[in-house]
Image 1: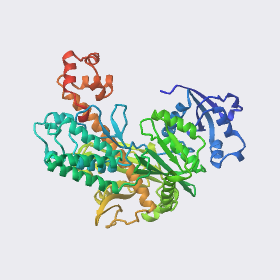
Image 2: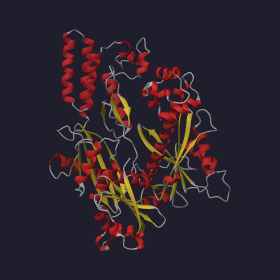
Image 3: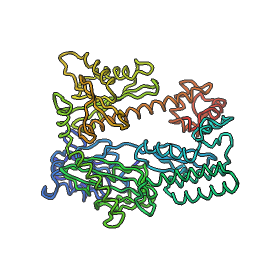
Image 4: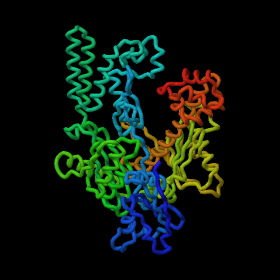
Length: 611
């Protein structure tokens, strides 16, 4: 919890500048309707905020407009500049102020984890770093990239894949062993020392230390051959071939083998494009790109905003961050990131050498993205959508819908809303599917649309995540609207594979074949982005409900624990993990939990891998 004091002033009431504190903190501008329109952070609030009331000639047009709209000013004083950074970031994400550049990216990037203190550890897929002594690798730019890496490692090194509880019950090797995909530690077919050596090789592979790994594998191959273990020698030989083939396709960004993020910015016609490369142990592991309306902010200002909003408390911050443009607050932001990472973080603006070359490559990628989308503003793209999709009017308000379930179970539906091409969080909705049983995607989609229509205030365009069948299901529901109501336009977007190539296709009502737009068409890219947002939200909501149900079922299978005691346990401890690590004495403090129940809870509760 960040300690703070709050002060509020009416800007129109007169001279209040003498009340400005000279302490670090956050300042908030609100308009006459009390809406937050700008959030900023300052080491010295008095010096920073006073600059907003200087001559308009000394300010950017954006700042002049923001001050003209402001009615109230609030200060939140913090005990340090680092706390001011954290508070500024959280307030911007919460309020999405009109005059801030806002990074709309709440995605938690995936990591690979090798647990500590396990005799036979496996690779685990996680999205949060913990201070648990485990070894983490990443972040990966997408779950697809991580799965590809995991699949490759499992094929080459054959680590175990099952949970600890499943492994403990085995009396003979599972199918993975029969297929040559596992070393069968469940039946002790591989010693702890031998398995540890393989885990060490996996770490070398993930750390990009390919030469060292190949040298170690060659030593192992010769040792097996000398001992006439020709089958094992052949297996290691195949590992060497697979590693060398993989190394050939990797792009090494630096000979130093450092962890670094490389950030490049390009801007044109009021739009800024940011591209960030992830370099881990000297190898490019992925990239992400972000688009902003820069509102008169320079590339240096965009980078400053990006650094403050992109890196979070529970994310990974590499030792070095390379930027394409110098920033004024380099020292203070570096200090803040060092505070987050609990390690020294360096921000560099290289002007020569290999690092400058990598930054230049990031800038070129940003320029390419801007050119590919023809530098269209959101308003321009919406105008293009009217023509490309043959709509009656410009779709200023768009809603997208998607469903998520696991073979018909825990089915949910989600709707996201976009206004003027930007997310409108107040229009986001989640639905639990109530009336459809079993695997029936079309029925679930129909139910969700019917319930959405009951809320009124319909959008100009519905985007459906699915193919022609999903589109027809929604069309049938909309056909039931009263004649005096104007039906929203419809478009469905689906990933489909044709002639070995996977691409996104658009389906429109009354059209037999899909609408074919170029892969870089701005309208297609906009619809794909909206589709990805609703899909992400649907999957997240579904996982949340599944996790809650898992907690319930884990407690319900314990004899003597019914709904009331289960709820008391969850109210007291907050999560299944907290119950798992609680002592018997702590469990006994919960009303209704007896000594026998506490013992059963400790004996029968699920292991972390099963939860």
